[in-house]
Image (cartoon, rainbow, N blue to C red; front, side, top):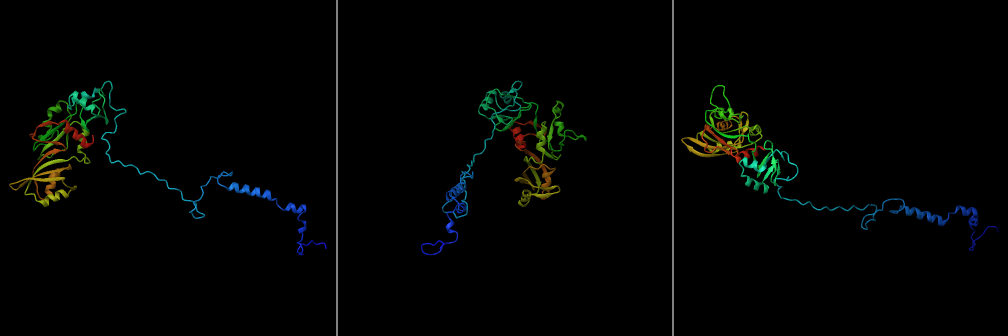
Length: 345
C-alpha cells in the first residue's frame, strides 16, 4: 500500500509526506527571522524609540481608554495690588531741559529774586527736595537755569521767575468799559493802566465785565495764561455778590442750582447763599464757572428776580478783598501760582 497511514489507521492528507522536501521548506517561513522582524517593528513604535517619535507620558490608570490625559493646569501666583498713591514727582535724575550750566542763573538766586525765600532758605528748600525745574526735582546746589524758559515749582506751585511777566488785580468801577481803549471816549480800564502801557507793558484783560458790573478783573502780559483762563473748557470758579429785587425764595434757589434754559443753552450756578434781606431786596452770594455774556443777570432774570447791583469778588484763589474801586494790585506769588495751576501751566 503506497499511501502512508497514521498509527491510528487513518490515512494522511495529500502531500503531507512531502513536508520535508526542499520545496516545502522554501514555502514555510523561518520562525527566527519572523520573530526578529516583529520585534524590530514593535520597537520602532515604542515612545522614544529609534523612529524619533517623542516620548509620550504613560496614561493615568483612572483615565478612560482612547482619550489622551488632560494637560495639567499651570497655577500662577495672584498679582500683588498696591493701594499706595504714586509719588507726586517721579523723575529725579536724567537730563533736564532749560538748565544752563554756564550762562544761566543759580537756582537759589532765581528763587530769591522771585520772592520765594532768601538765598539761604532757598538752599534749604533745594536740599529738602521741594524745588523742581521742568518737572524734575533738583537736590544739588549750584544748578543754573534759564529764567526765560525754565518752569520752576516749589511744593508743586509754580513760581514766576521771568522778570517781565506782570499779573495785576484791578477793581473795575461801575460804569467803566472792560477795554483798553474806547472810540467813544468813555472811561475804560486802559485809562487806569495807561502809565504801564506807555512804559512798554503790553497788558491783556482776562475776560470782560459789562459796564454796570463792578469788581475784580485780571490784567497780565502772559498770553498763554490769559487765553486759558478765558477758554470755556477751563472751569475756573468766579464769585459774585448780587443784589436782586425781591425776597429770593427757596424755589428760585433750587431752579438756579438745577439749571434753567437760556437762549444760548442751559445754565446753572455751582452754589448760592442768601446773605441779607433788606427793604425788599436780597443780597446773594453766587459761585459759578461759566463766562457767558451777562450770565449772572440772565440767570436771575429767568427765575423772576432781576439784578440791581453786581460785584465780582473772586476769580479762583484771587480775591478782591478790601481793594478800592479803580485801584491796582500786583498779585502775590501764591495767587499767581494758583492761577497757573488752575489752567495746567
